[in-house]
Image 1: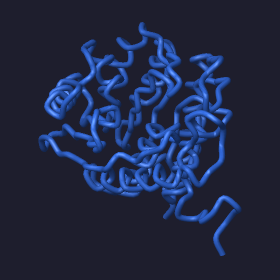
Image 2: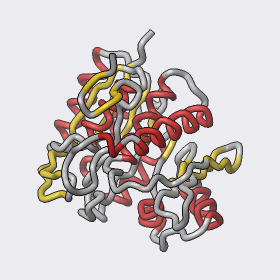
Image 3: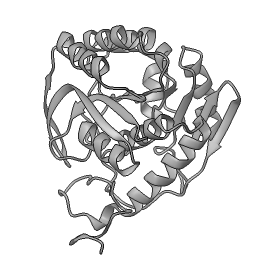
Length: 273
């Protein structure tokens, strides 16, 4: 049976991040993707130039409409933008705590644009974190949620992961892509303690949408019945190849997207035969 996964996130018209990246990752991981839009953005590989928010009540209506008709096997939450949207999403999802919910706290775009109102952090922390099966912040996002400086070592990453889990999420995966050095380690804090997931850093500027892609791949694997550790290992391995193959694409002049369909597309020219 093919699983169904719902993304609640913003749109990226250039296709590298947000809803577009989520749907690509869902398809690549073999699940049926659905989407409830929280925001429209004007952006490309060089940055975000504008944001138009969807009314919070209508976001709630989108999510309710999906659940009223479709079996939802997992949910991925991305760009929330403000307190009203965070509250609306939490209000609907609190009735669906029996399915995996992956929360990727999208706060700052690759080009530096702020994608989350600072006032929304409190609502996100109080209302959405307790609903999350897994929270997936990068180092700046983890620091912002805790109101501390970004981690600069593995020890600090582990400490922040445990502190974030204490805020209510069942588990927290702090991503170490911003950590200095040749490695890109992630640390999971769960009821079973700490687990590390290793990967070599890929030398490329084309990393647009990596957070969206990882969290979506995680939601897909959890929807298919994987354990948390299995889902993280599989999703991280998938993302590593997607980043390594990113330079086979020719999209934009800034931070280009990862290659979501690296298992299908063999060259720039099209599909493999």
